Image (cartoon, rainbow, N blue to C red; front, side, top):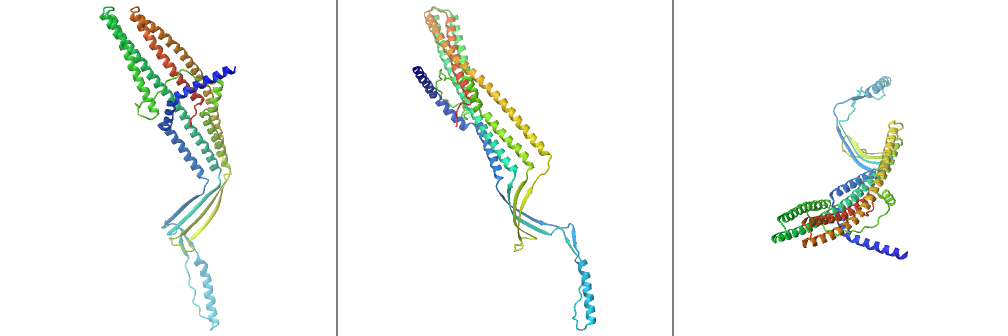
Length: 463
């Protein structure tokens, strides 16, 4: 038993080492795509914008210092009367009467000038000129809205960061599938080029046989038609190769015709986890669920923010400045004013409605999370069985190639000896070409399905 386990571990190590060697070029392309892809850069800028918004929310906790200046010029407007005449004239009249009587009764009484009558004073409500220049310091002591807003921005910023990871994982899948798509297209060209050599050699053989009067012209014409058919297939394959190359380079933000380094595809496949473990891994590691968790946390803070509208707000404010009719600075011009401001909304019927609305939004996100979990589970099942089927297709396609090679070798030998006709040769050659193409498709289809499986289960590790 120990010997069997040892052999299995050794085999697994060799397969892993082979696949790792195969992935060296691809991993370098993935790294390049993560550094240069334009859409990913745009996604990263959105995350940086959310970080700036978070810093803005954090800054609300700190004091704010500002300068506020006002200089006014006024003309007209309402006036107010100061009744100094009405108040003082009766007093002056009595004093004048007393002084007159005192002088008449006593010649030695000093002579005092009579007090004149004065008019009431009329002043305007607006000063002709007025200025106030203040250096103002404001500091929040307790404000629930600022506290909850900061927590909301933290959660939304993390959600945006997860959004970048989601796009990175999707980009990695796209790069892998584009890489294997190009490799498949290129190998398809190679297969058709080999087929073209075969049919061209068959054409030369047919022409030689016709010159020696061993076959008729119809054999030559059939061989020529077969050459033209393969050339058409080859032209289509080359077109697909160029399109696949352009798309891969597009993902890496490179020139469309830049060369791509390819590694030989492996027919071996690593054993992957069972379906239940794959579903559990996907539900634990998929960034979409993590992002929704941050949205749920942000919604919890939104509920607390709306509830906090019932709480008081306390702020401090200190003003130091100068005021007067002009900017003459003296000991009486400057002033200081300190304030503690309490604001408490004792009753607002809209608060309950806002709290209820925030709770409903949370229920919507919870429902969305359940839906996403079900979708991820379904995606995992589909990717799992598609990968398993792709692995089985490789085995079947390889067996088909081996059988087609043996059949073509025998038919070709008989054809060269004149014991098989052109139809048999053409069928054998076509069957071999088709088998080789199907084998190539099966290999790269498996690699593509593996990339999809990695995407669905979030098993690919990136920094």
